[in-house]
Image 1: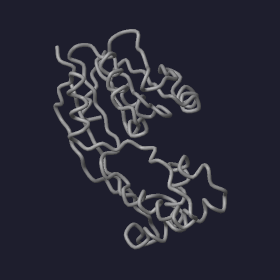
Image 2 (image 1 turned 90 degrees about the horizontal axis):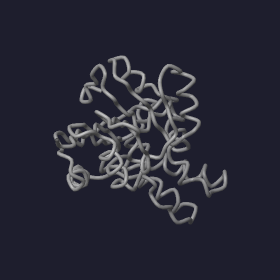
Image 3 (image 1 turned 90 degrees about the vertical axis):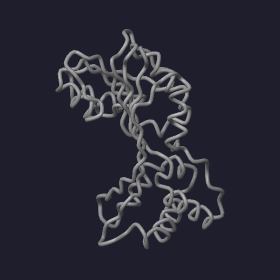
Length: 228
């Protein structure tokens, strides 16, 4: 939000807005903000939570806006979209000249040890590990993708952000069931339990301390400008 610096009267899109909390925070600055997410359930919740704001269901790879925007903002979403060039193209087309793109999402090395532990879990049940559903680019790769589109990258940072999970000893299992559900979907309930137990055993020496699990997030944060 500090990098976005929303101003009164600016037209801003919150891309991948979820239930709208950050959309509402942007609106408090007097900006004309709209939220967009591909999940109908998330948008329904956002509309219920913030009925005075505008929300719509759309895919980040294909979205359109009626009028050029001053800024596109996105938080913790773009690592779910492997077709990064499509997203960047849609953001470019939606911005006015001089408009800015401010985003943060998982970068290279994000949850790397968790992915390795899941591989061990699939080995334990003699199943091939499914394809990684996430897109975690390096700083240089994503900056190059932005520049190839025509953006000027004004700021880019890749940094560690260790995050303590709630729910104590069940924190990692809950995290895996929520965020790695696509990797586990084809398994039986017992196979899922075995994969999760194996992953927990593999990660406990490094990520579990004092009845708390910590996830090794690495975040990529960028500010890019569409030139005048």
